[in-house]
Image (cartoon, rainbow, N blue to C red; front, top):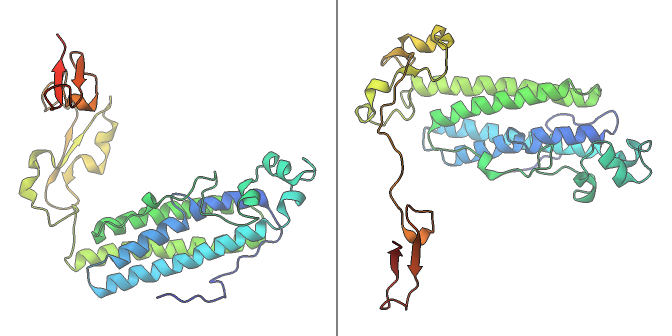
Amino acid sequence: MFFHDKRLQYNARPERPDPVFARKLQEVLGGQWGEISVMMSYLFQGWNCRGPAKYRDMILDIATEEISHIEMLATMIARLLEKGPVDAQEEAAKDPFVAAVLGGMNPQHVIVNGLGASPNDSMGYPWNARYTIASGNLLADFRYNVTAESQGRLQVCRLYQMTTDRGVRDMLSFLIARDTMHQNQWLAAIEELQADGLEETPVPSAFPENLQLSEVAYQFINTSRGLDSQAGRWASGPSIDGKGEFEYVGDPQPMGEEIRELEDGDPLALSTAKKPLRVIPPGLGGGEQRRLAAD
């Protein structure tokens, strides 16, 4: 179960209202790489974890911390919106709602949320549960988590450079530092997971390798003109998993059959077929549903 401490994990108080920056902060709250996404991913990864207890506990520790980050961001956004619609736009228009639109503020912050945060990104697009990644395979999930923390830190660093507000920068500095730890934490977890012999590259390692088409398993296929990609580590030498040798295919040829057209499907799907089709409804053809192709 969870408990709520009324104290924030870290400070979230701006020097002054800034409704335009409040909209920008929504991206790292409710965007694809925002705090809601990582919180939900980590919670379900932890709840679904069937590995050793240390991994489950570690995942849920980070997941719970991410709830604190959401609280900080929501609080900061609400404070940035205090008196925002009028103060920030009084030169643009007398009406606060018109001012909000003209000045780049998100009107929903006023109309829908009453000067508060929302589970949306900076463009007002709602957070989507499909951003949640929890496959049950810890190595696959931990690699995704490194990506999520990298993208999140990148966006927070960009936001840091978009403001001179010392209070906002103070909070963002904390989030940047925590993303530094979380990137390192997931990389350490990947290293330990492999050292424990639980997973290895390629994921999933439990799948029988003899069932893959081995002759293409370590080929780099050059599908563009030019051979610049041949200079990379991925084009020659031992594969990263140590199970093969990279091979560069500079002029790849199709390996499959030529397909000019597909066979007709079920006429009831009403897709365009090779010949005009008509369907006889039930009851008009001996009680059965018949399908006839016109001559």
